[in-house]
Length: 324
Image 1 (spheres, helix red, strand yellow):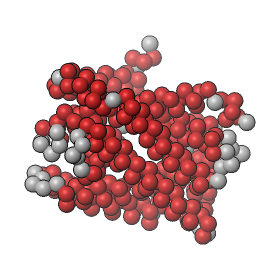
Image 2 (cartoon, helix red, strand yellow; image 1 turned 135 degrees about the vertical axis):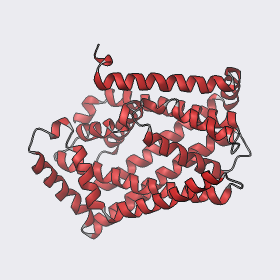
Image 3 (tube, rainbow, N blue to C red; image 1 turned 90 degrees about the horizontal axis):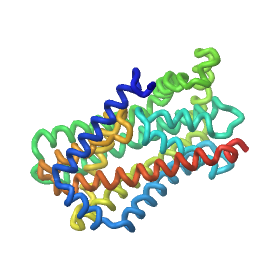
C-alpha cells in the first residue's frame, strides 16, 4: 500500500503518534472531565464557535476578493475556503494554496498564482504583527511570569515585530522566495522555470507600483488583521464559556502559543497532540486552569475540523459551478 511508503509513511507515523499524545493528554485529566466540560460547553456554543470560524474565513476571502477584484465572490469563497480546509487536513498546510491556484476560474493563471503569493505574504506580515503585539500584551498583563517565560515572550515580541516590518519593506525578495516554492506546483512545471519566475515577479512587482495597487495591499492587510483578530476573539469565546472570569489576555497568550506551534508542527495533519500537550504544559505551569486549557484547545480543534470538512465537501460538489 502506498500509504506505507516514503513520505506517506512519515506522515502516517507522525499522525498516529500525535493522536496517541492527544488521547494521553485527555486521559491525564480524566475522561469524565472531558465529558463534563463538553456537556457544560454545550452544542449551541459549539455551533457558535463553528459559525465564528466560518465568519473568520469569510473575512479572509473578502480580503482576497478586494485584492484581485474577482467578479464572483461565491466562487472565490468556495475556492479559498476549500483550500483552507485542505490545509487544515493535510501535512504542511500548503497543499490548499495549489488547489486555490488551480480551481479558481481565471484567464490568466500566472496572475492568479501571483495574487495568492501576495495574499500569503500579507498574511504573514499581519500575523507576525499580531504575534508581536500579543507577546507584549502577555508580558504587561500576567504578573509573576517565570523568568524564562518572560525572556521568551520579550525576545519573541521584538523578533516578530521586526519580521513584520522586514517582510513589508522587502516585499519583492519575499515574493521571490514564494515563487521558488510555487513553481513546484505540477501545472507550472510544464514550462521553463526561469520564464515562470520572471513572469510571476513582474506581475507581483505591480503591487508595489501605482496608488491603486498600494491601496489594495494596505486594504488587504487591514482585512488580514481582522482575520487575526477574529482568531483571538474565537479563542476568547471558547475560554469565556469554560472559565467565565478569564481575561482577553489569556486569548492573546494562547493565540501566540498555538500559532507558533501550528507552524512548527505543520507536517502533522490537524496538529493533534502537540497543541494539547502544550496546553497541558501551560496548565501545569499555573498560568491558567489546566483542565480548561486542554479543553479549550480540544473544543476549538473539533470546531475547525468540522468546518474544514464542510469546506472540502462544498469544493468537491461545486466542480461544474467553478468551471463556469
